[in-house]
Image (cartoon, rainbow, N blue to C red; front, side, top):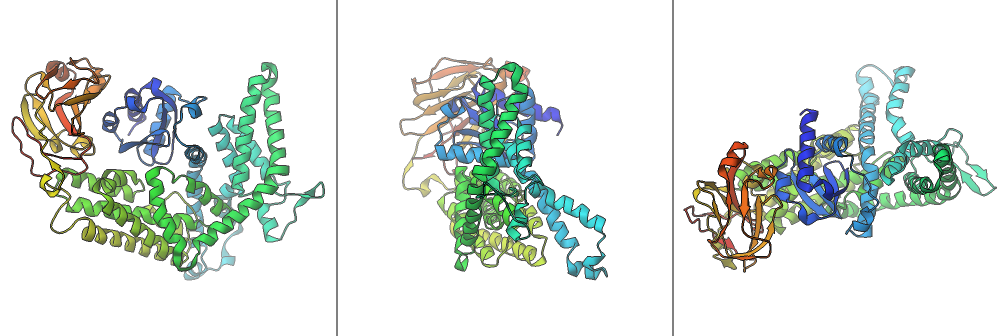
Length: 621
């Protein structure tokens, strides 16, 4: 896809969300995350129609658009090149309705996300070094470790050690960028914390170097691998810089603001934060490692169970800082190992559901989501298939993830990197044959376990994912009629994957032959999109229905539609509620298909009757 395509995607997303509605923009590994003023003003269905969008949800004060690894970076870059939204707005905290804990986790995640690619790449370099410099491999080629040329050994060391040696600088840089400071100042402060003038932290820990004592009582060492020191120093420095720039005279700002920020930040880091935080950080890493090595794999079992729940709630980013600390301090990352079983379990449950369904659209969407999960993006499978299927599917996924984590913990498997999932994740273990073979074997076993359990307990032999209305005791025969004259077709046949896959809910569609729009049910008009292309209705029984006029017609800004209803109005089935200009839609090259979606239908309904009135039996709440 060319840059122009990504710019078009960015423009479409902003058009639907509303440029004035966006307070700030950022992204993680898979999601574009927008801080918005009014979440209710966003039409999710229109966002999901935009190319490359795999789903949306709102959590922790952010409107999150799932795009996938790699794609999200390009869309975000295009977004910023066109609109230059703030990464952090002055009003963000005031307008954020998330909890302090959610805000803290999100802010920390935003700092660590830009660092993931370099640590992931370094992990691969370490893995390749472990393979190429392995004594067994060398012996097979008639060589010994002493045969490796000094220039080659030095070159490989540059590739494997640089990122972790200067990790403090990267974190300070990212913290300044996130907090609204000048990133280059943060980078310099981070470099100063690992200056060669200070005793190397790893050498001090190994007993080959001694700290320098300041004032006879404060030990000065470098802060290689000290994640918290770098994080807190970066936050303090960026905050100080913003305050100084408000009061510093313009003639002095260029020189004296950086001077004071660097002086104060480095002094605080070396003489206050460092000695306190560094000790705490070392003990925290030991506690985490001890938890992961609890008897019988209990630690792995608990984390394997909790991690998918963290993904569901958007709290999984808090694991990034812990993983970074583990890698920087110990060189290994056992945490991602037990968390990784979620990906295998989620893919297996999604695939089992997709293969057993009778619906071609659900089958297609499920298989596509499975492939996406295998490549590392879990949200389409999790939110689009597993969670929509019900609690049994969720429990099977959680249980399988937990068991896989327990086994890996028992066997002492640990990665030397992070950032890779499912199919690519074995690359984090190639540094040692036992590690990679065991990890792959347990991953496959976890996949098989989740797949079999899904078939046994989630989808019984006597039924499929589709359930008829009669299969529930609380059935209500609510009738939904065609809102317009024309040929009625199944929703699975519309030219829009979001609606055709029933991600928005059960429903049907009409190829209109005339222009009068009638109410398909009796109820209250709860929502009318500003562009008039979408109408939300709630019946007396609480059923939520979306009347969607055309496909991609949001771009026409309401021109083809004339509505004679308003929000809050009570309407009766068959009542004329407006008109649609079919000729204008055709002239604009858009699809005039009218869709009726039951947005709160949790299950697919089979055995529907297609006729001109289209009586649709709907499951009651």
